[in-house]
Amino acid sequence: MNSHGFLTKSVEKKEIALIRQKVSIFLKSESQKSNYYKNISEKIDNLNDLINPVLFDKVNNLLANSNPELSQIELHVQEAGCPGIPPHQDNFYHHIDPLDGLKVLIPLQSMDKSQGALIFLDNEVNSPVLEHCSSEFANFSSFINKNIIDSLKFTTTSYCYLEGDCSYHFMNSIHFSEGNNTNLDFYFLVYRFQKPNSKTDLNLRSKYEKCYENHLKRLK
Image (cartoon, rainbow, N blue to C red; front, side, top):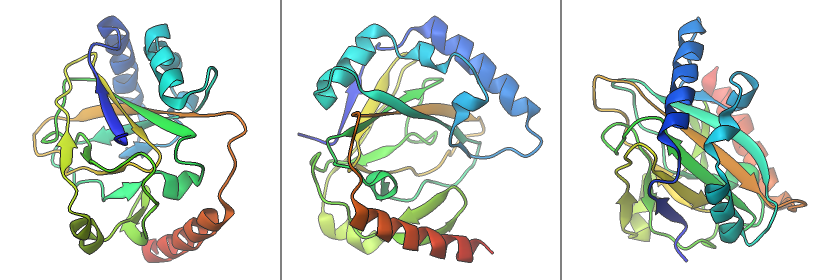
């Protein structure tokens, strides 16, 4: 099974409009804006409203679990002219079984790769976690070197999201973005679902911790 997929007309447009307005108000109140807010649900309420029963059932089916936990909601801010997101796998950060977690990406406007939407390599859902290097990118501590990406020879997929569309990707999905090449700002939310009682891969966690330590040194 492919590590990512696309769901059309899965989110109510009126709910997106309400959340987009809240995100806009929040960002205007920020004295120092960031390109990434790890736990945006601590700042903005009712973000769960975008996950309607039909979409939640789809998550249940993909994870083969009747009651996955919503572990985190992230806000990605793709400002006009911003650089891209380096290639990575989320499971390098979360270190669980690749079938135990799923992320749902919901843009708050129509969006494509020219505006900062993610580009996915067409790798299998249970592909191994590749070697990651520490980065100098704030909020993106680790990345996969280009020579490794090129050696895989995977095709890529980028989605053109209309308002109400969303995508999903499993933990070992390899993805990146090419940045926002327009003069407008774009936003998307990422909802992380995880099976209850998922076990941590201690070896992978150790690799991540070492990489993160080096990342912090490189930011100094």
